Amino acid sequence: MRSHLKSRHEITIEPTRSAIQEEVNKQLEQLYLQAETSNQTEEVDTRVLRKVLDSDRIHEAFVSLLVTANLPFRLVELPQFHAYNQCLNPEAAGFVTTSHSHVATKDYGIVRNIGAIVADNATTNDTLCRAISKYLREEEQVDWDPVFQRVRCIGHIINLAVQDFLFQDIINMQQLAAYDEEDERGNVEDEAGRRSTVRGIGSLGKLHNIVTFIRGSPGRTKRFKKVAGRMIPLDNRTRWNSWYTMVQVALDHE
Image (cartoon, rainbow, N blue to C red; front, side, top):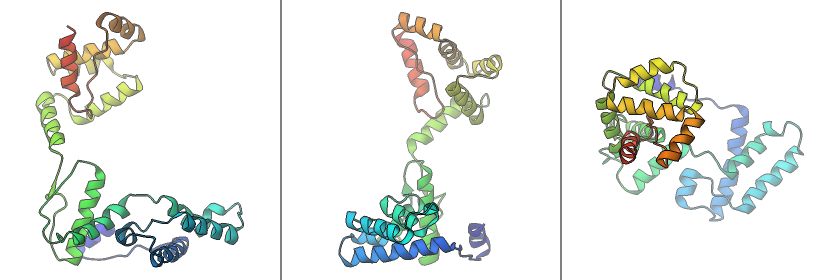
C-alpha cells in the first residue's frame, strides 16, 4: 500500500516501528558504533551490512542479555535477545540487497550511468532492481524502470521459448506445474485424462507417458533398470534441458 501511494499518488507514509524494534535498533547502534570506533569494521560493512562484530562484541551483547534479563521465561520477547541474535547472523534479505546497491553504485561512480542490470531470474534480483529504481528516483531524480531495464537470464528466456514451442495451446504452465507436483507426491489424480492431454504434444508426449508409467510402479522400475541398465530421466518444468535429456537417454537405450 505504501509503495502504491508513493508511486501513484506521491504520498509518502513512513512505516512505524514497535517499541521493541526501537529498543533493539538503539542497542545495536551502540554496539556498531563501538566496533566502528575501534576499527573493527570495514567501511562497506559499517555503511551497509553493519554486522561485522568479532567474538568480543558478540560476548558483550550476550553478557548484556544475561545481566539485564536474568534469563526469564519471556527471554525471547526482550530487545536484548533480539539484538544478540541479530549480531550473530542477520538475515541477508532486502536490507543487504537494497543498501549495498546504493553504496556499490556510488563507489564505482555509476549512479547515473546504469542502463540495465543483467542477472538471473532470482526474485532477490527483482528486489534489487526495485531498490535501485526507488533510490534513483528519490535521490537522483532519474527515472529507471525496474522491469524494462532488468535483463533476465537468456537461458531461462530460451527455455520459456522452447516450452511455448513444444506445448503451444495444448498445455499451459499451470498444468505443467500441477503435473510436477503430482509426480513429486507420487499421486496422480486423473491419470487417464493427464495421459490424454500430454499425448497431444506428439512423440514427446508419448515418451513422457511411457516414462511416467514405468516410474509409477516399483516393480516396473526394477524390471526396466534390469533390462536397460538405467532409468530414463523424467522431464520437469523447472529443470532446463530435461526434455532433451529424456529424449537423448531414450534414443541411446532404444
